[in-house]
Amino acid sequence: MRFVEITVYSAFLCSAVIGRKDPRCFPPTHISLHPDCVQDSTRENANFDCQGAHFERTAGIELSCSSDHDCSNTGEPNEWCNSDRRGYQWTTRSCHCDLKLGACTVQRYDKRTNDVQWAYCTPRNRFRCDKSDYCSPTTNSNDYLNS
Image (cartoon, rainbow, N blue to C red; front, side, top):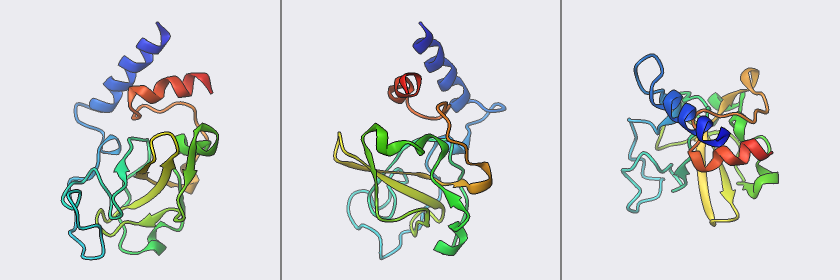
């Protein structure tokens, strides 16, 4: 029963923050069709970053950027702090400015699905290794309860 309550609460918070969508829970609405980005079917889809990784909802914050230097004081989203213990592996890039999204993003590799995910970074002064996350899909809620 507790899992259902958290799932419903998570969905409510993610879909309605002060009567509107919380932008941290959704991919950006503006993208740049940069020539150095992947040029496949994901090119015009904001759910995919410049390298083709798919969007993973977290409580990371959409921070605008124009260079990697703009992201130097950011880190992974709070929920990703123990990724290596949950079957994920970091990609070679830490938080960086994604050319397509114009935002500070970070990627991780899911060993279970052989998939690369991206999320917004978190300012270092707001980072806390949390177990709770009101933006993650319900399939991840159980991971946080059991960790």
